[in-house]
Image (cartoon, rainbow, N blue to C red; front, side, top):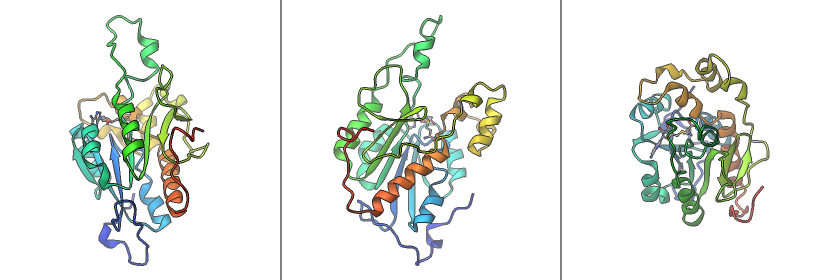
Length: 248
Ligand SMILES: C[S@@+](CC[C@H](N)C(=O)[O-])C[C@H]1O[C@@H](n2cnc3c(N)ncnc32)[C@H](O)[C@@H]1O
């Protein structure tokens, strides 16, 4: 994939000033993993003629290292995304958060009767982040997770196999491609490498490789959502919409 250094972007490209007042459009990519959601953002930004600066936060040092290799011009922070959000949210125009899904997944229900199953409470940081962003953040945000085994505590927009909490309207079809066939396939990781255009076999960290490969948001969904964010930004008279009164 081709990426440009910020200094290489020509002056003829207009720079979007977002809520931070910066000449570049500043994005915070929380729980960044290997950047499935982020993969097509440079193409979208180029199409729209804006310059973006992405800060990615990831706890797993090996995932962070590979993310940095994949997106060499992003700022990568190895640390706790939940705390980083609290301390830095004002510095960004757009925030995407993909907190870990295992404690919410419907797999919890289907595995609950298995011996030695590691039962745990649903991780409330997901809802903490939605409430926090919806009430304190002035830019646009996306919090993404799986469809949980319980009724979501805060209503969300269901797209494909995921839920999205956003403060802008999401298209009904965000282009998310179906991975059901892949998840039951024998060579799952190999197929996910093709699907996500990424070689997961490079990962030498502590998390299972198939879990890492399953983590990624489909880049086509990431692309559509970012296009929507920027389209809304261009139509400057479009009001922000709260998740509490614009459920689709
Ligand atoms: C569901 S994946 C995110 C997928 C990502 N949006 C993508 O499309 O590639 C969640 C990631 O969060 C990381 N993670 C877990 N807890 C974290 C924390 N407290 N702070 C930062 N990252 C964390 C995991 O290592 C994992 O890579």
